[in-house]
Length: 128
Image (cartoon, rainbow, N blue to C red; front, side, top):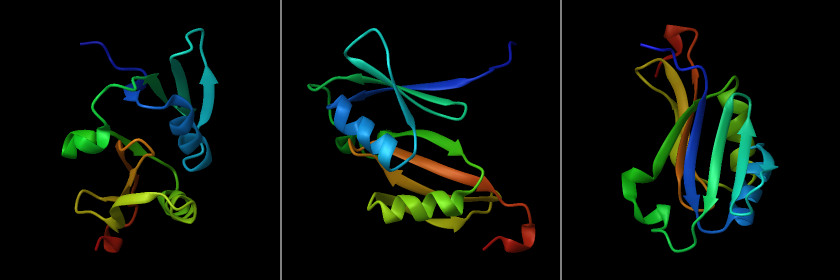
């Protein structure tokens, strides 16, 4: 079986520019235009989110648990959590240590998608 060498996500968003501003200003992604005016790529580290503008699609906020689309491991979940909170973003899960040895939290994007962010816990004694 071939090894997966990178990962990207494809999402439908109702308003490309408004959602891009959230990814840029709240989550720190770089926004890249491509040769199609209905698409923008949001990039951070090894992650690419390919966003296509679909104003008539079902809003992600109406999808319940199906609005989760990514679990992203980050180097410093604490500082990301603080910056996301300071930006006023809506959290769908408070930061906490989990039994699977990850400290994680969840955020709701400007269009209603949900993303989890986590950092492995290096000292098992810190698990709550």
